[in-house]
Image (cartoon, rainbow, N blue to C red; front, top):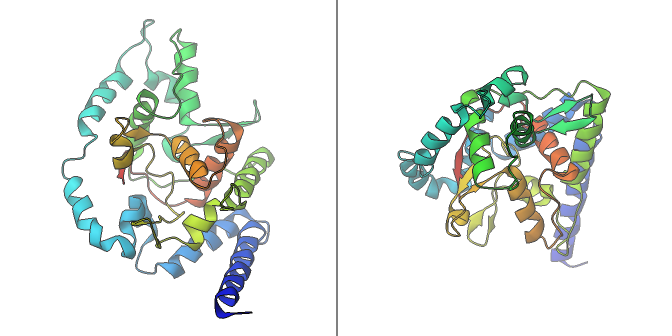
Amino acid sequence: MNKTMLIAASSLIVTGLFAAAIKAGSGSVEDEIAAFQGYFNKKFPEVALQDYKDGVNVLPQYAHRRANWEILMEFPPYELEMETVREEWAAPFANGKTFAECFADKPPATQYPYYDAKSDDIRTVVGDINACLEANGEQPIKNLKNGKIARLVAAFKEQYNGEDMAIDVSSGGARKWYEKGEEFYWTKRGQLNFSCADCHVHSAGKNIRGDVLSAGLGHTTGFPVYRTKWAQAGKPWGTVHRRYQGCNKQVRAKPFAAQGPEYKALEFYEAVMNTGVPLLVPSQRQ
């Protein structure tokens, strides 16, 4: 076996062992969170847990670009639209009720997505916004990936900025969905045979096509995001499910439907792994 093959084989062994440690562990979700976050603490010891809210911008490999990002954040490109959508969030429907009334009995943004035992389903902010619209005689939003739905999600989540993620996985039903998302995260797919973890765990901080791969820790805490790449096509806003679809396409796998069970489970798993990371919504990403 030549040196290149030996390195590749060793990498696969380490990858496999780490994945097994995260997925199996002692069977405790808390232990799996600790193992996942501990991996990044060891990989990037200079990055504190709460700083992962800034996404790739916080990684040492991205330091040469951080100054530009900080300047951009002095006048965020999304701020004018956020002023408009805050008014839309507060505006009454035809029956006089508002989004705020719908969400009065819902968990805070730091506890989304959450498991609903009655429907045996994962409830997302996107789903609850559309449920609110329908319950009040309004038309639900059909585009579940970008535009208006993303901005409305941001209007809800920004109210909890700075508060730490804390997802409830205490019930058997919630654990079932967690395990579905966990399986998705670590499973290879597509012609390139990549998993989410291949890019955002094992290769976090490495360069790809002139960009730096972000860390899996902190994913979802900034979504919806205003993305430079998407802005070039005139659709800068995106939900996390839009990003999931893009990732699947990049590894040449068929993407799943936004708000389908696959991506809801994945969002749930990532949210659990982000326990203790504060929200910062919306975020700007490259």
